[in-house]
Length: 218
Image (tube, rainbow, N blue to C red):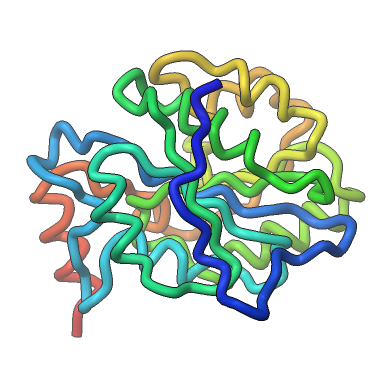
């Protein structure tokens, strides 16, 4: 098993929520940032790091938030400070690709969760209202199936997966991401459409970061 607990950021007096039902959030922030030249998780836009922006977008209604780290794990974990309701796990095999990070995150999800919302730390235009819309769609389907974001022909995380798909998510290998499971079960997918493709943009390079800063910084 490649999951190892690095730290729990639960504050004293704030135990992990134990209510039955509802999805957990799994934020993937383990990548090596090979095209970025440094840990892009710690790159700042408007005074907040990419990983902080991603965490700030997570709706308060999720059961818990699991953050999966790998590359520069100690530095990224330290940047999260004393956030409540956040558990950090490490993917020891992060160099092998995203599949192992998804597996580490899903394995760390509480047994009470009926699904997992997979989020990427390098999508700075994903907002809390969008994620709330996705959770409403998931609830409307009785916490079944998959809810994914889309724009045109692009269907991608953020995405919410019912527990039914956890085994497949844990079987992902190498650079396979959650999109592989979405494509495999296209008939089970409900799409939440966004107006601009930019909403689903990844920050992969320094140029991407500068472009995002130009749009998000005052």
